[in-house]
Length: 169
Image (tube, helix red, strand yellow):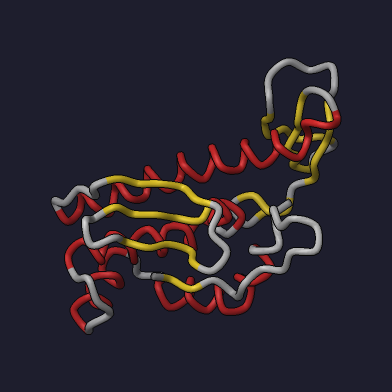
């Protein structure tokens, strides 16, 4: 499973205490999941969602702070067609699957949605602000065009296909 853009193995550790954590095993990174086998998938998904929340909230706070703004709220969702969105009331929503992408991609998407707090459109002023907050905007968008649809496959129910490569707003 990719975690912050780096491939990690997964390991079931039935006798361990706790839920899930990252460890190096034989020099390779693994997400270790404790408990009974039937809880493995849920605990792995819960771990990824917690990590996503932590990284997204930190990036949003940094970008919103740079603008002297504060979102109405930040939520992590199980979206299939959008990486993020900003409501007219200023609530920011993000896909938990962003934790699977490299950090600069998550940072870009957070900057993009925070920029909507100032400009609820995709005008030249919006893009200038997004690029000011995240200088790697073009690189992140290119990464998403190539790799985004693969990330939507994670967490899909059996037989369920992702909707698309993942739009922003």
